[in-house]
Length: 423
Image 1 (tube, rainbow, N blue to C red):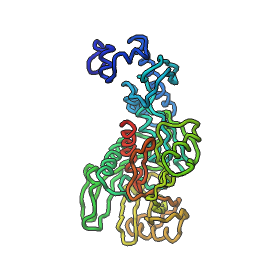
Image 2 (spheres, rainbow, N blue to C red):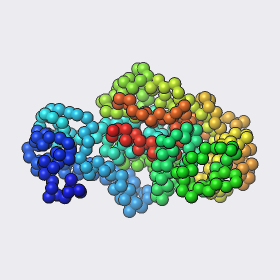
Image 3 (tube, rainbow, N blue to C red):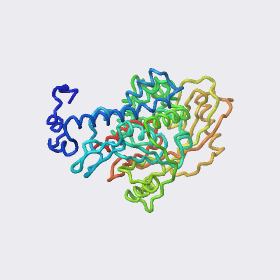
Image 4 (cartoon, rainbow, N blue to C red):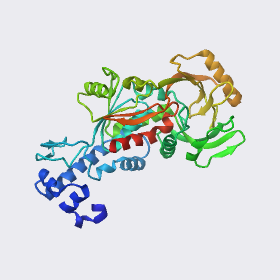
């Protein structure tokens, strides 16, 4: 009302009409209109102060100007507008700041929903970030931190891999490209923009993903383009700190519902946190299916070997290589070389034979890597599903089944989760 009509038009009747409630409802909670405005100011000041308390966690990263700018931009718009009530309440209401309204009717002031996100990989953390930005009270519950999740094994190059290219997937990929490209402009995020080549060996290959990539070029052996690449150790650490700075709490625990299903899941989460959340978001990657009795999830085993970087700056992916899935993704301190794509394989042990085969294919694509020392090796199980799950059932929202596209779809799908909670 202040923005659109000006302070002179800020009356109790105008506010309640804009809110779509009876004028009398406001006076069930507040002595007069001035009392309402005071409560509103205190409420919003508290929220803004809470958001800005995250600034000390950013010391040593980025620049002062960038951190201030980013914090302002991540301050929820809901901080500046009246909250939509997260749930209907009657009787005397006392919020965490000690503001009290008289009994009866619906509360006009709300502190957002209480949400538990299960999973601390790139999907879970990004969902937690977007929900915190939207004004919700968020807790992440996971049995391991991001550094020990499958996300830490990923080459983390923007590219939709092992996921069905439906219209909503492509849109989430587009959003992800734009967000990651902006993060690449900020020091300390671990994200950079790198040029490279997507080898295309099949006639009629689905290239619909190129719509999200500015300036891509179709060449004889594939598609040349410039996409975001994340150094997972830096990016996941940055994202974790960012989420914590927004007030998200973390609990290390394994969620064990009495039986698969939404109701039992909410009860299991309540036992861990001591209170029942308004919403539970399942973003636990490969572990998500067991929580809900979803038999459509399955692993795609991925093995990588990391070599010393002789100075490479361009990546290459070759999904249809006759010898098997192959990719070379240079980072600041190493080159991630892969890989394998064994659907249904739960083996997380490094296979020396598979590594030898990977290196043979890699050397054929990028001869400069021959003779470079092996720095590390790893296996991760990509969380695949016949079709990724992103929907709401009662108090449970699902966001899993991203295959090898977790980094690619994370920001777009996190925004979709926030939309589901707002609906």
